[in-house]
Image (cartoon, rainbow, N blue to C red; front, side, top):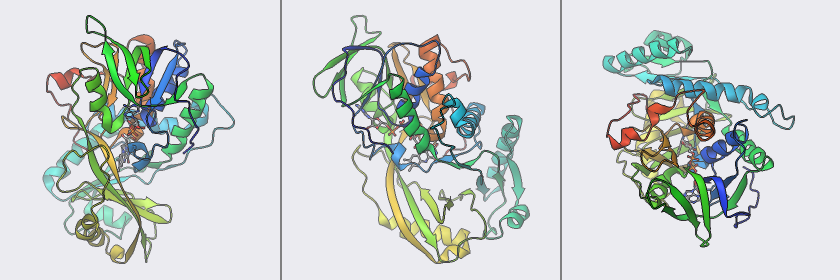
Length: 406
Ligand SMILES: Cc1cc2nc3c(=O)[nH]c(=O)nc-3n(C[C@H](O)[C@H](O)[C@H](O)COP(=O)(O)OP(=O)(O)OC[C@H]3O[C@@H](n4cnc5c(N)ncnc54)[C@H](O)[C@@H]3O)c2cc1C
């Protein structure tokens, strides 16, 4: 990841758009604003930690799938696949922009009971109708294609080998930042610590940095990841987003598999996939509370007691493996429905959310950047209608359920 040193003092006292958080989502929004022909305003991105060390973005598993139960989530990932595959063209044909790999070894979503297999079949129909390549596989079909799985407890699975798997999102992130800066977006290092609203209470007037500097804003965008609720609270807004730990492990196998391991979602909640010469796996903890923003302590018993036994059972060849790396990251977990929250607050109209992505924000970043830029430039979503993610469902306590949550 590039680490350009940014100033800590904004050049101006007022910006058309202030983005709080400059990681994957904030940088996507900033870049798409510069790419929108109908927007020529000023943009300031404020980032508290330019090393991005503790962000969701740095801890991601970088997977992309079309296996969702909601059409809009499928469409967002389809745009991500298109964006990745045509990255240079999207970046204006800039010769410096590299090709971005997309490993389409697919997700293998396993079902160990008929009820869940029924949900997978329903999802498969929807995904197929959206143009996705998902197929429902019987146990025998899985065994034929991937003989290394233990399948006695498995009823079937959904699998898709088109535009689904793993992608190098860090290259997108790097180029969004670099190109946004070149096109005039200002990034500063600093923490937003407060906001003021106007007399009527229907707009955020300014944000205050930790340095004490006050910056006026036309629009403020909350792109602050797991800290989103804290940022919203500065504007007096409640947001059901909290940091939740997710564990990732990289391991080496004494006897590597003879073909790519699809991103396999085991019924236990453990997921695993090929990762170059190694393998990557992860899972939530059994007890899954919200945690402190700075709590990244590992729980090594999870590997010993849960993850390794699941790996060795599902793929007996993984009985002899060596852990080579591990980390803890935070999901920005939307406690209402684990789906994104996008667009304006219902009363504070210039406060825009880009929050609550839980485990699928990396792949949604192109669609979110484009959509929020459209909202700012045109007052509406255009390419994809992202309004199902509106904040009003939070106020109404009406979850927008996504059945395929990982
Ligand atoms: C272990 C793990 C695995 C994942 N796997 C996948 C996956 O396979 N596929 C997928 O699509 N998604 C995945 N995700 C989710 C995805 O990584 C995130 O949704 C995405 O990276 C979110 O980006 P973000 O910019 O919203 O948040 P972040 O990356 O957390 O960035 C928020 C930024 O805001 C800054 N900030 C916060 N508060 C302030 C403030 N007050 N002032 C200034 N700056 C502030 C922070 O420093 C940070 O840089 C995974 C997440 C984790 C943790």
